[in-house]
Image 1 (tube, rainbow, N blue to C red):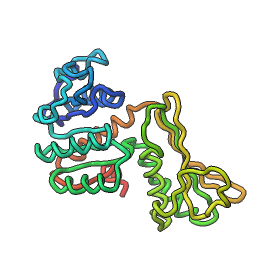
Image 2 (cartoon, rainbow, N blue to C red; image 1 turned 120 degrees about the horizontal axis):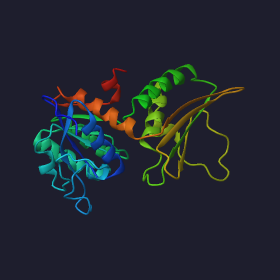
Image 3 (cartoon, rainbow, N blue to C red; image 1 turned 180 degrees about the horizontal axis):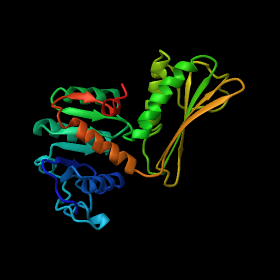
Image 4 (cartoon, one colour; image 1 turned 180 degrees about the vertical axis):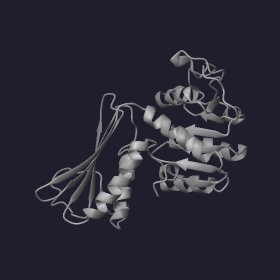
Length: 273
């Protein structure tokens, strides 16, 4: 176990027994400036009471609990990659305890996003559909490409994830669409096409299409295709491990360390605005 640094960032991890939760626990444990102070899971989890590092054969000294207040008691920041309803419940508790939040959860409704924005008046929240540094650089590249290829190019977004992912398109794919639409002066709600079947007619040149693939253990692949006459431009990001999301999350933790309120994204964390 790594030595505890002086004045470490005190981190609680939600969904601590899940695939992403375990990656986060290990990233915190292995970091030089963070310490695990809480680990949360649902009341029905068989991992309750176990050490948060047990799945990896490590000892953190922190037991997984369903008591959100107890998990947050000694923490400065919560990292949450769970489900929208669970994340919102955690945020309400974070507001009560003055704990900042790093949100990697996707699939929020507009109403839920509004609740998060309201909570950010009381605590600092960093929310992003993808914590990967590479993905966020890709967002910036897409913004540049969309502006340069604003006419004469059809835009399609193709994403692939593991069989267990419950939402589609992915939050990252939707964010890509939002970035492109904004660069083109459009609203994604007005130009997105999420499904095609049967006689669809000619493609609307102002539309942004989405296709979702689910299968196996694909961590996350995203490709944006700009298809013109006589050429195609493809901008692709492929994840081979969730570790990139964990490391991006820790960068967000460090970014929030001196913040007491506000709603931020990974562009803020990486200085890409």
